[in-house]
Every structure is written in C-alpha cells, then in structure tokens.
Length: 528
Image 1: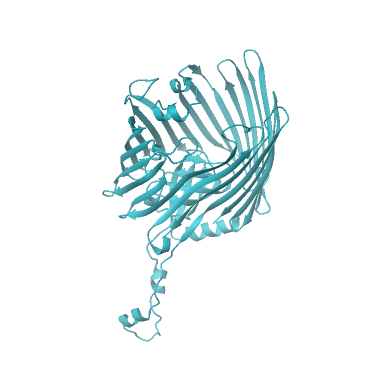
Image 2: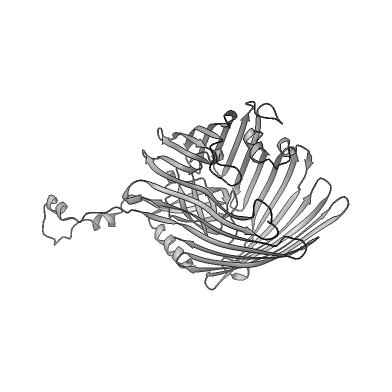
C-alpha cells in the first residue's frame, strides 16, 4: 500500500501544482479541510497532512465542494488535529507538448478526410457508476473487575459516494453506522440492543459550473453548523467569488437522528471569497436559520463561518448567535451560543504561534428541552468560555516541542487548566515514519488539582505494512476529601493488507481508584 501511494504521488508530481490548506475539523476516521474543487481537488486525490513540515498522515479525498473537502485517513504517524497543514499535488490540466504530438497522425499515415475519420472513430462511452467509499467493522469488549461495567459493542460503519449514476450527472452520498450493544453496563438502559444511525443519504445534481441541488439527509454544503436536514437544498454560484444557497426540511431527532416532522427548519445563506490563497485571502459564509417545534416558532439564529489569511497568518472562526424568539425559559435576550476561533501564525519554518477562544452553551429552545428530558436544568443555564495560547518549535535532531496554556471560565465559576507540554521525536533510532511523544499536563477541578502524563509511540515495520502503536498514561487528582488516580496502558497493531484492506487489533488496561478493566478491540476496514 505504501509503495502504491508513492507511485501515485510520483505520477502526480509531473506537471503538478502544489495546493495547501488547513485541517478545519476532525471526526472519526475522517478530516475536513478548507480547500476544495475551487483549488482543483477531486475525489480520489491523494495528499499528506503535515505538522511543522513533517508528514504525519497520508489522506485521500472522499467528497469535495467548492471550498471544503472530506478526506479519509489512509495511514497515520500521528493523528491529525485542527490547524495541521494539508498538501496536495494537483496535476495541471493544460495539454503538454507530448500530449498534443501524440494526437497527431503518424507522418507515414495516408491522408484521410476529417469527416471520414470522425465516422470511423469508436464511440466514447463516459464513465458511469463510479463507486468509492469505505466499509468498516469493529468489535469492542470490556471486562471489568471492579464494577458491573462489562459490555460488548459491535459496530458496522460505511461512507462513500456513487457518482455519474447510469452515466448521468446525478450522484449519491451516504454515511452511517449500525451497532449492537450488550452487557451489564447497558442492561436496562435505552442504549442496549441494536441501532441504525444515518448521517448522510442524499442524491445530488450539479447546478451551473459550481453549484448543486440535493435532497435526502445531509449537512448544508456551505454551513455545516446548521445541522442535519431531511429535505432539500440548492447552492449556486453568482459570479466568480459569490454564492448563495437555501435549505428546507425537517430536523431529525437529536439523540439517534430518527426521522421526525416535529421540527421544520429553514436556512438561507450567502458566501464570498476574495484575494489569493497564501497571500491575502478571505472567505466567509453567513446564514439565517429558523425553526418551529410542534407548530410554534422556536428558534432564529445567525450562523457565521469566516477564514482570513495574510501571508503565513491565518484566522478561522465559526459562531452561532441565537435570538430570543420567546421559547427560552432559562435565558433571555440575544445569546452567543457557540464560538470557535483559531489563530495561527507560522513565523518561521521552525516556529508557529497559535491562540484561540471558544464559547459554548446549550440551546435554550423547546425542541432541545423536550427531546433531552433527562438533562439537568442547570445544564441549560450554564455555559463556558475557553481561551488559550500555544506555540510549536521545530528543534534540532528531528524534535518538536509543543506548548499550550488554557483558561476555562464557566458560568458557575472560574476553572483553570493551566498547561500542557509535548515533546515529539520524528524517525527515532533512524526508523522512517516512526514517532515518539511525551506529554505532561496539569489537572484542575472546582475542588482540587492534579497532574498527568502520556507516552505515545508509533513504529512501522516490514516496509510499512505493519504499524505498532503503544500508549501509557497516568492521571492523579487530589480533591478536597479524597484522591483519584488512573493508569492506562494499550498496545495496538495495524496491518495494511493491500487492496484497500486494513486490519487492526489491540488491548488496553485501565487501573486505579475503583478501576480495573481490560478492553479488547478489533477492526477491519475495506476502502474501495
């Protein structure tokens, strides 16, 4: 598999242009980046995730829109995080001289009228039913020696895309999982047994050069913060740098995304981009969302997503502002319910500074209160602010030092999570692709404080087909009247079997205060 990726990358470099972006979101087995079809990305493109110039993962494009793409992680040295660089080599589209010459008839070929050649030319059949995606099965079993926490979870996950259905311009995307949970930990609860959750199941058709129409279940193309819709949306380009869109449908239930007609929801939005990537660039999306609950107007909100770049400095921000439409019970007036702001500045090749601010509070709407009845009312009243600063330094000897300081202030009082320090070593002992990292951090709660540490290593062998991952961690917290400690150790092995197959397995032990359990994991992935 590693050799195949190398061949693909080498083939792409000839006549290729480098396209760079940033990781904007990390989810299970996938990441989202801030570059898309506008920069030349297409499904199937292969690239790398880099951190301070070092490769930490190989990725492939699964789905792509104008300014965003969803990537599957093919191979990892370190797990990507928000803010990491992504790099693609995109083959240029203009024909080369060799390509042009190859289309000319040989010099000794007899003259044949153009019309006659067209008659004799074989009919070109366009590609159809282009099928790619992923299927994964995992089994987790926990054996607990301290409490009644034995359980087993079987999980089947799939996502992918069927493009050019029957040779048309229609495509279909899907993503979902099915799982079965059993054991003492789930006995008698609503989480016991089987369940199917569908995240994405939609048909789409292009509109114009860079627009689309979709219906089914989806996240809006431009403003994913709007949440899931069962309905339809349209997204169209108006000029070179502006687009508008709208979505209309019903919100599925919050816990398991079951279809429901209780919460009709609508969204209208606009987006823009100006400038040049890597120099001075800005893009933004702004939307108005409105919904009702069981016939009553329940929510009105302004959704914002913004990116700004100036040289090597970059700011990413998303925000949700909820207006008081009469359904709130615990708050009044306009509320900033969500904010995620991330600033990074790569001063030199070896020094990157970053800072950020986060705000979150639970929606105080009738839909939220009614569908999550088991929540304590205090959770609707409380929220938190988090501010943080950090820096990364590339050191001699293929070392990287990462520092971060956080401050969290909740509505119930201040809480400080002071610091975290990570030292990473790339290619230790001369092993290409290997990685060692050591992290130490502080812990603090309302009534106590403590500390912790984490050792992590990843070592490829047998030409990269096998990867050994090991982890050891420790946490200690001294509360007002008692102390808590937790130790965990895990060993996992990944095998890249080729042909799109990967097999993973491992064991993890947790021990400490009232804790003694073993967790066994097995995973089988097939990518097509």
